[in-house]
Image (cartoon, rainbow, N blue to C red; front, side):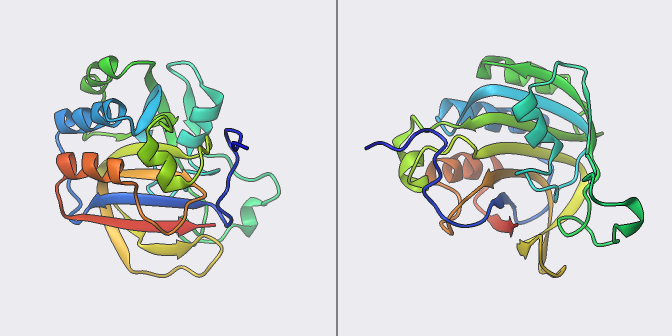
Length: 228
């Protein structure tokens, strides 16, 4: 009997897995756009897509926390301002000073553009404040019509998101962390990187994603995970 779309056949907690160059480089806007278009054309992701710019936190976990996660599910119109929301059960005075992903992430962005086609991505990115503000591009989900993706994840889980980031300044991500644990390293500085978020195994990025990222970001890549 086939598993329904959205069924998660991997047990465990959610994971925000990132892949980035070993050096915290900001690739050119043209290279970033070409990478995003290739992700669609190589059937790694499926549209629609949403582009936002402002202040993003590299450690705002893509599942549940990131403003891009909220944008993916809520589909806000272009021009909408998105901000991190504090949990209603946490009083401001009780918040600690731990950095994200252990403490609160603070993000504030505007939705710049949306689209259903890879053909409009390059134009939208050409008009974005690339290198001046943090850029986040989130896709509707992975393309499980690609047999290599379904084999990697064992089932077509529609909750697995993919987002591309181009940060105005380097930020650090832990290479292995639990958001419920104690802040600890080692850390990896990142500027251009890709995150996938929801329940993963320990297999690392799928082969089609690796191929696109190596082509556009170079062969020397780092992979890290935050679990919650």
